[in-house]
Image (cartoon, rainbow, N blue to C red; front, side):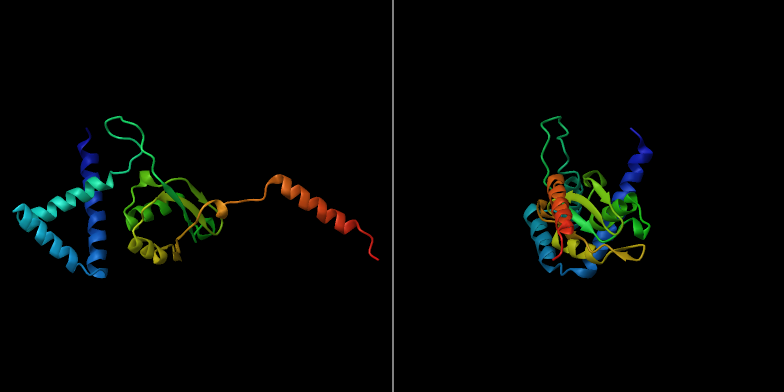
Length: 185
């Protein structure tokens, strides 16, 4: 077991959690959650700090949830993945690694849970696990990388990925060719 990488992983997790906590404290009304923590602590007959520590532990365990297979070596779990479009691409001089790192930092998704990334000139198609919270989705609308806003949007079904089949293209090309050869008159 490598204690240096374990320590680095712990520091990374703490920094990520601190960023998310800071954003929540600035942007959300937490009164309902305060009341819940007080209630949980009272019901469990524990100190509020211990209750908050247990909740943080649950959060960290939850970050590992949804992996493609159980740790016990059980059957692989299916994870529903959704396709998104980001309005940033090669033209904006960014790399796939930079986009992934930004998503990890800003949304809390684990890098191992980010699916295929298809970077094009002006945009990027990316696959992420289902269940992105609405506040994170809204936040990702305005996040910038190299002065370009992500403007993330979910692509629905296959209609966003349909392309004309080769036979359709050939048929349309032949029709255009016929029309252009007709005598005018």
